[in-house]
Image 1 (spheres, rainbow, N blue to C red):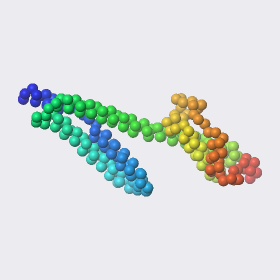
Image 2: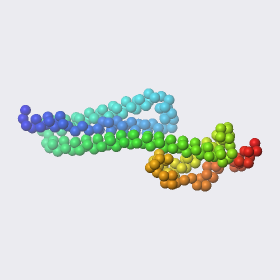
Image 3: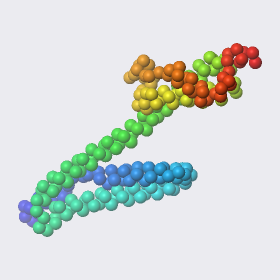
Image 4: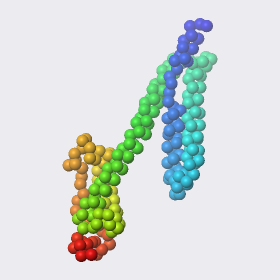
Length: 217
């Protein structure tokens, strides 16, 4: 074995380990899920029949295996192909691509972990805001705290106000609600116009209960 053959063997053993297969599998699954949910009724079908989701996973894994295999073949061809010229430059280029694919995988992992975590804390903040709003609204309207009338009025009204609060501040800021990172004054609050808008949307005209009316019943 001459020096060139030893160098090529060493280059093969130390070939760049790219993450093309994993990245391709993740991207394929996201695309399949996005296409499926884009059609009316398909999302409910996927929820009702989990095997469809498993099929998406299998297809994505197959695509990832094929992509990774093709990359490995490309590396082997660049090193061992008879008469190949400039294989060292080719390996440097493939090594750069492999590093970029690893960076892309790290970004996908960060997004995959950070996005649902942000949604979880934002949803928890919404539940906290809605619960406090219902209690406060029931007290202001003179409705019984555990009565049947407080639920149909307070729940949709507070849900409307929380949606406006979310639209105004964003998911990320709402995830940091009631934490030491952001102060209460850092959020854009609900105005009287917003309250009136939700009242008009939830409660029909002339049906808004008053403390006097509630106390007389």
